[in-house]
Image 1 (cartoon, each protein chain N blue to C red):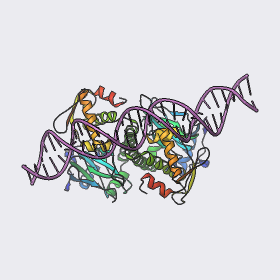
Image 2: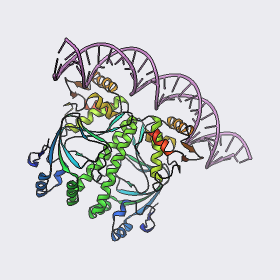
Image 3: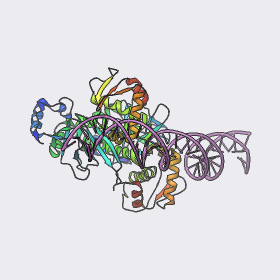
Image 4: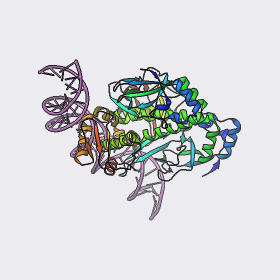
Length: 235
Length: 235
DNA sequence: CGTGTCCTTGAGTGGCTTCAATCAGTGTGG
DNA sequence: CCACACTGATTGAAGCCACTCAAGGACACG
């Protein structure tokens, strides 16, 4: 469950927060960090109990979930490899974290994290800029949840997956292929819909020739321009 | 429209970001900042053109708005006195800013702001913590937009107003009175509803004895505990 | 007094939900 | 090997909450 991490072979080397650290600081961190594995669906952190560590996502997708008393759930954030999991400077988390897929984390104690943060202005600057981008993304999602139709939401989600899971390919190629990191239920929880609605709308996108569903979780976006039109997105 | 600000008589002294600055830095800032006034409804910043300044809200309420091509609007953030307006470290805004009420700002040039930020670790730390809280709040709102009913949304909004407009009184007193800073249309744009729905649900809250509507924009929360129950809120 | 803005109220509709049934895939144990 | 259970996805039909359209009232302003 726990083992020493090795920054040299880190799968998100150069993309995670740690990229801001100088070599000697990195060596120190290498001694602080521990890798942990979680299987899909397992709970990583709980809303109720304070978390005494933070982590960088190495592989997989983490769901941040808020739940109402009667069981209604909303995914309020998705973390992809290189993203930071946990709330710096406040041990009181406001939501649960669950592994969406199998997940590998690089964990570091809260106090060590904050010491590192205060010791390295570059690191703090990077965290600040990422947090600002996180606000941007959350607000973009507020537009989706408040005003977009079910069809637009699903199209937006697929484009978001493509963007976050295939950061290299970018908008270059017109067709992109990947595995959906979430089940229908989870997509519904992220989009503020029911799983049946998601299912129906994915089918409609396929009928319109915009996507192709493969066996299992596979999906291929056939026409990103058309998808963006269907999603009412800017770019 | 523009006049030199005086930090000594600043209405948000001790609450805004500037609280992190030492006295001599504050004096320097006093020479950098300019006050600007906007009347209710006027556009402060536009999504399309880059903004070359940032500002602290001194009085009034600022709406951050995302608009879809066909005119659907969503308010993705509300700024109250002492909040920061503008996106540090990126001149590309993703949304419009409009004055909800009459608004007074304390503006400072982008380059000067960033210089100040790099010069003062305490200032950067405070901005970071506020930005993290902003993420928390945005995510809380995603839960509202994705999963709450119209009645719950309206109740949540009223409590949010009370919290942000009356920061001192807190949850102490059971009844709180204030002026609604937004019109029905604006509340609807914030809640992902139509104005008719907002109107009806406010009336229902009044019928239930939870609030009292005064003439004009005035409102009195009669039973905060009951409201929190109606809003499905934690605290 | 007309005009405009904002809010309220009513009636009817529609998009998404809800409830329910079916099916495919997967693992389990006799 | 097959019955069985279980999970996730799909499909259908009915219902409801919020939307849409429409009208009217309250108030301010010129």
